[in-house]
Length: 191
Image 1 (cartoon, helix red, strand yellow):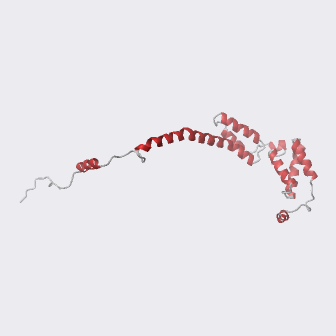
Image 2 (cartoon, helix red, strand yellow):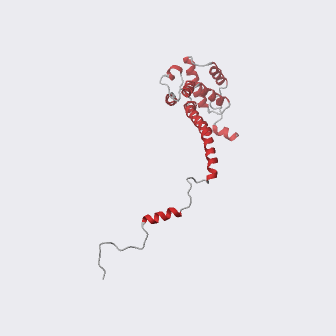
Image 3 (tube, helix red, strand yellow):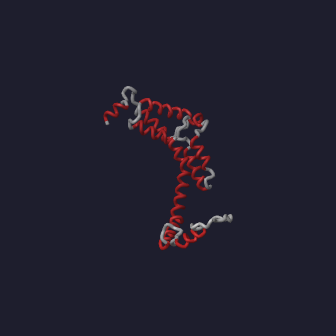
C-alpha cells in the first residue's frame, strides 16, 4: 500500500527547460538576412547606391511635378491670369513650397471683376485656339458667332491685343452666312 506524501509522482516527460536547451543545441546556424552572408555586402552596396542617387532624383522630380500642377490646371481652365500663376509656381520652387497653396487656390478661382474690367474670363491663348478652329472650319456657326461676340466685347472695353484684333478681322473676313455653313454631320460625312 502506498502512502500519499503530498508530492506528485515523478513523470517521465521532459521539463520545459530541458526541452528548450535541447532545441537550442540542436538548431542550425541562423542568419539574420534572407541572403547568404557572401551576397549581403554586395546587396547593401547596391541599396546604398540606389538611396544615394535614385531617391533624391525621384524626390526632386516629384517636387517639381507637384509645384507645376497649378500652372497646368490654370492652362487647362484657360485662366486669364495664367502667366502670373506660372510665375508664382516658379517662386514657390525657390521658396521651398511656401507659395504653392496660394498658386493652387488661384488656379481654381476666377478673378471676381476680371470680366467687368477686361471683357472676358479667358486667357488670350484660348481665343487663338478657338480662332484657328474657326478659320479651319472645325467650329459650328453659332460657336463662331459667340467667339466674335466675345472679341467684340473685349474690343469695346479697349482690351483687345494686336494679335486678337487681327483674329477679329480674319473672322469677319471669313464670315459665312449661318445657312451656308456646313453642319457637323456634313463635315463628318465628307471625312
